[in-house]
Image (cartoon, rainbow, N blue to C red; front, side, top):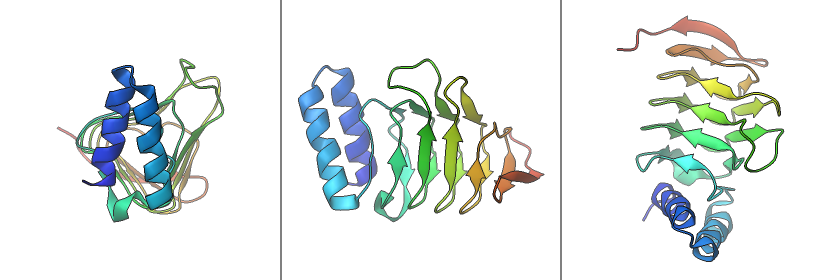
Length: 148
């Protein structure tokens, strides 16, 4: 069983009101992969954690779409409390490169659009349009793809 499946399972167990079991899986994921993968996040079953998700840190107020690929040492952080209406949203088919940081503000939702690519070590603090590729610190767009 991969870390992706274990994370999805912990989120599912949390939704099924089995928080103690979800919390146990979160602890196992941390011990083995040094990743903080919260069971309160909303993720799809087909998420891909490259390189076993090593060192990934995710805030609980995150919604991740289908076929999203996260590389090692990615951080998805927001300056808000668990359960806040403001989230980080990664739409379908997003790729987040190794070491990238996506940092949301506490008073608004930050969205990475469908098919967007966040380059390795980029720091994203603003929305990324669908199909855009962003790189750098702070992240700036370098090109857009046509998303059908």
